Image (cartoon, rainbow, N blue to C red; front, side, top):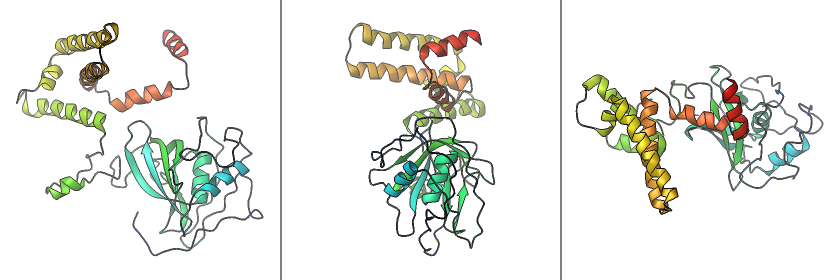
Length: 300
């Protein structure tokens, strides 16, 4: 978001002007100030929606009323002189940083209640929920505060591209690429090791289509030969198992798991399945026992 001239501290509603928007929640920790680093919001069912009337550019942010536990948590945040704190949205499955904005008390309270990432617009002097125009909401699964309690992470799943440019994330401009003369590309992602590997496999797949087999590559050989790929996955799985049966050292186990993961990800590429889809499946199973999950498979 572009910086603007300093604004007065966002006003905080007084007890006399507050309207109760939802009843006290037992799922929030009873302690007045939760331990630093997390809000401890573990239940995944949505809170009742908060009705907030959009404010004009010249109006003050709408006042939100919260229950005592949330009020105490909001009090514990170190808001700056303008009543704001940095708020970062992060993809719960990929770990990608989606965007950065600012939040005030009301924005954080609204996010806790609605589980939609809500920010404070410094240019409009009002609250705004990401996706209220584009419908590309960021659905919040958890919220974290840093150790100094002066910045916030909204951990969630995006409904679509986060950036106004249409990119998945606002962070696609690499400083080192720029220093080397490369132009920014909206396809560029802030990729962790796992997603860098997925991207490399994807590029090899594209090269087969555009250039044929071209330069020799083990990944290309696997992509072109399903039987070879399946045999390697079986082989690597067996070698991983052996590290347990023969009590091999930890480094050997890590190495064999790396081999198995790589070959399995090539298979995912062949099947046009993204790693993000796999992680989403795993996340959805967190609240379900393995026994229940297997039983549900038999019924379907």
